[in-house]
Image (cartoon, rainbow, N blue to C red; front, side, top):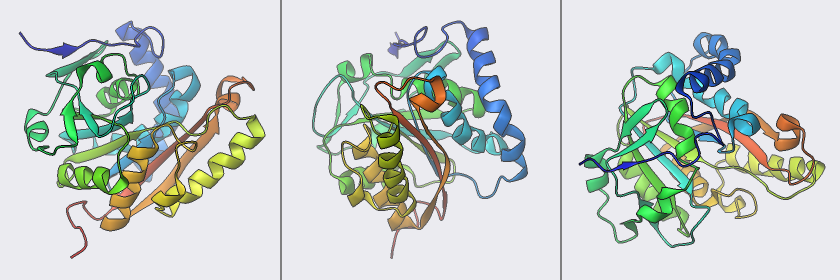
Length: 274
């Protein structure tokens, strides 16, 4: 019997009803669809997106996923890196399942790519993945934007940026591969302080400077630092698409959380420095 991870946050972070979910995603993507097709540019190599509920950060995430719409048929592998909110560990955790289920259907895990990750710091931890939302909430967007793809879902624990960058470059060595880093930005700040803090993070991302990203800047800091290191190594450029916080998206001034969306384009990740 196929081992399938069941949705953990359907009905809370996003609608559990398929028709309602499709409608919600269409509403979020629609404002960006025409612009993304008219100004497609080079195909995205990587995205950075938030992972709160659709009401909180869905519009920010949609600004990034809309950039995939002109390239619906292009991607066959999506490598997803996110933080583990419920567990603390060192290294990178694989899910130990064959597919992830969502209300829109199941997404197959890329067994060939998983098998290639024969490194001591990459291991299976099904418990870490079971209730984690950072990867799960990205899947309905991907199912809407792309036609046919498999996923490599990786939860990044306490891991050096160069280690994460090595995994990224090993996996993202083909035109048909997309990288998605799932992270929110600053937490527990006043609205004004959050904006100042997040603009510093924006500057670090745009300048591809992993040393300026700390744990208080992004809950997915380890994955984000790895992406920035790989992007600098491979000649990618980061473009900021949107940056807001929960006060601006949902109206709450308490427990403000920052959200940002970035797209990375440029040379293939396989074209590392010679």
